[in-house]
Image 1 (cartoon, chains in turn blue, cyan):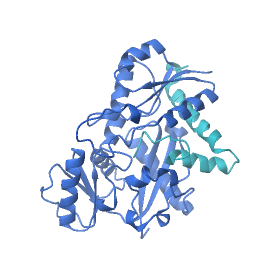
Image 2 (cartoon, chains in turn green, purple):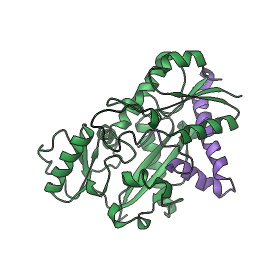
Image 3 (tube, one colour):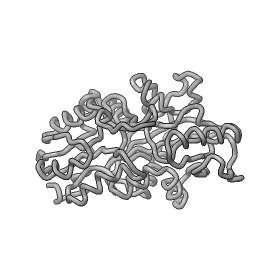
Image 4 (cartoon, helix red, strand yellow):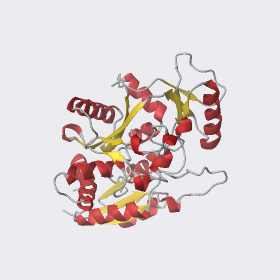
Length: 284
Length: 53
């Protein structure tokens, strides 16, 4: 049966502008190409699809459209739980939507909070510390090299070869730069030298399925990227993405990645669809 | 962990993963993309049940 579906997203071209915004601000927002493709796919599936920008105009537009379902991919604009704003609004309006709910979206936007949940469930995640200021004392248990990135950004924002801090001077410099640029707590983790993999998951409960693991082909990128999946690779060079899919892995490694993907999906309370990213240590 | 993975056709990780699997069965990237989007709807509808249908 065809549904009346509202496709909700935040387009990069509609994003607010503000003084002092960084070059990569709004890199995680969507393009017309994506929205057109989703609407076309839904039409091919027998549905009626209408795009609506995911902002406060939804309060007036959704009751007019009366969708059976919202296809939500809103990233939001402001605040430390911005990805959960539209789902919260949809719940207030009692309109069902695809994907994860308010709590899971707020949790997983915050990398340190997500890591705390994973650690509680004994799921592997590198040791870390969160910095609100560049001169905070460093946890003596942490060892260099470390990796520095914003706590609440996607699309590799703040991630470059310079994110790898080999000593305290580099760490403090990166902290100063990222705190000034992103104006949010900065996450510092033990750096894992190795392969970068990602696994897609679809479904819920007993009905989940995993997509083939994808590996970023670092060998095809210049040394300047330092075997890190950088913001530049995800944006400027996105149309020449170098990858291996299925990733060359042993069946036991795929089984372990799938097990961990399902566990992370479950303990963070995700629904319907997600992607879990991994660093596979060189020794493994 | 990304519960809002990118869905840019032919570029986003999730789309490429689905396309790689479907290619082995002779499915074109365009058809694979359509199937991925409609699978997301289908799993949500199964989860939501009578609220949608």
